[in-house]
Length: 190
Image (cartoon, rainbow, N blue to C red; front, top):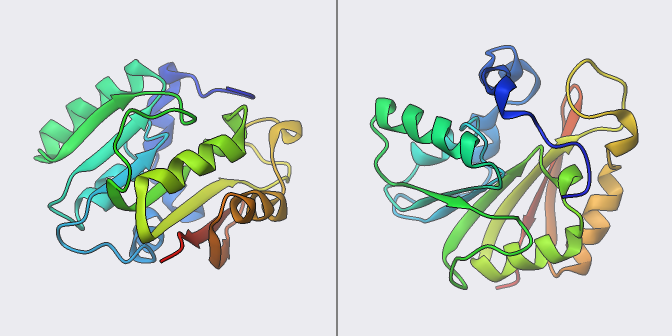
């Protein structure tokens, strides 16, 4: 991991309802064209800010991937309580994930890109796991001063991420600007 890693001791902060005023995981999940039985990746799942909106859209497998076992444990407890039985928990670095090629039709990587040492490797790994025509939403912190997120020097310009995704073979579908962050929607080649 390259930069600031989120402290699992502050996990409840990730589920603060105020966060949805800045980033709406429901509207981002809507842009992924998730079919009722599609498998979906949640990369850097944490304790589930995006996991539940993804799980509500499909009966397929949700692969919650995170490098922090404590965060996956918190997510597992929340998912059991909410009745989501189709979430799998995978402890892994985002540059090498033990999942099959073409295992998912959609993916989210939220607030984790700035932590990755080799982002292009991570994007290539994402592309490997997505089916042809699969969509991904990459959300990260905009390089602006704010009370939330990593230090300013660890934040990455949106256009830098777009160029890296394109160099990994993704096509740009859309970008969304949020109060302190951005979301990039991309697609794998058909």
